[in-house]
Length: 194
Figure (cartoon, rainbow, N blue to C red):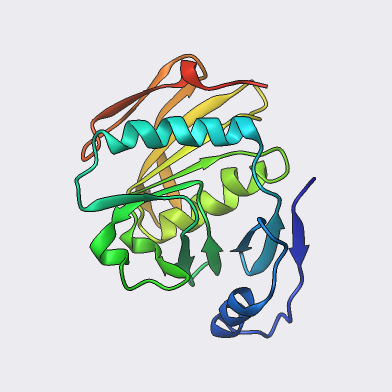
């Protein structure tokens, strides 16, 4: 199954778009995001996708401060792009997020992780990093199972405008190192491949 886009009135402002996103009854279990002003409905991720996210999450819990959390379904708002994005993993201080309703300000995130699905890999490679960089999220880890040359993991950092600098890029099987405040090496050899 592939992603579905929902067209909206091009004159609609950000608040109206968010209200529609929050109030509409979407298909059970689907992932609903606003990507560059377009509501996108994606099916639930496949098993291998979830295994990768779970392995990264397990490693992250061993190094994050007690007052930080790892969230799998929390949306982050980037109104300047306009985006309401739900990364596969989002690391942020719990206290800062405690007042959140359906979403938090993207600037609260310390790290976002996306694991590509075949149907939405383009969003994870282009639209989402531009939004995450614009919001000033310090680190973005893209685990690209569908990369043209074979599965890769790319760590982006040092956001400037809507662009990140590539800090590390590896093929599956090689380790990827996250800098402080994480100080963590993730073994991509543990990730299942299709």
